[in-house]
Image 1 (cartoon, rainbow, N blue to C red):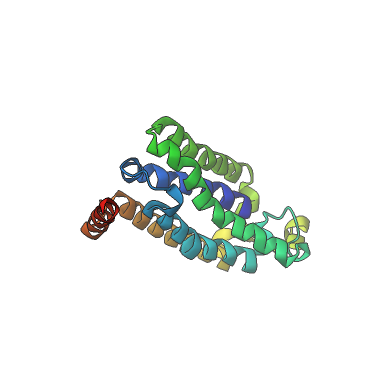
Image 2: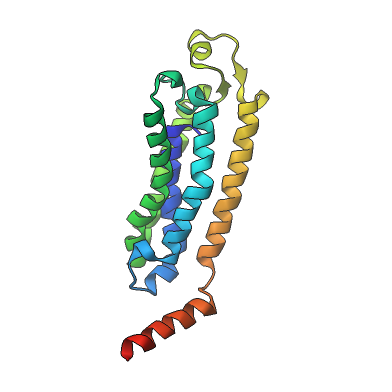
Length: 197
């Protein structure tokens, strides 16, 4: 996924996770950082989103930067920092939206989900030619030997990444909607009993 769009989508996904977990968040006064929904958001960012973004930055770098800069000229440390920042925006988006979700400020949380996604969609439309082309920075700049996204390895990788991220997102949504297990309730009850002693 192109890095500018990946950052926006990450914020939107984090806010979405907070919105879906609103019932569980409202039932607990525990710190948001240590909550089960926060752990799910962090796990998604680390094990799903980070590898997907890193793959495109490492193997299709010019496309990941949308041909605005030559990927070979970007220092690897900066490249790595941008990829990590994109993935970190999932839990950051969650932590921004979670207090609002806990306070039942539904309209604001929905706006936090929709606004970054809408901006990403608008950018995708504006820069459609850049996103739909598989090439190096030089090939794109000079308009030679470029290939349509759908007829390239990049296009196939994009389909796999989108399918994987979509499946993982749906799974996370299912986990966040599910009531906490009896084990969690029993553990919480044990903690309360221990506190009374």
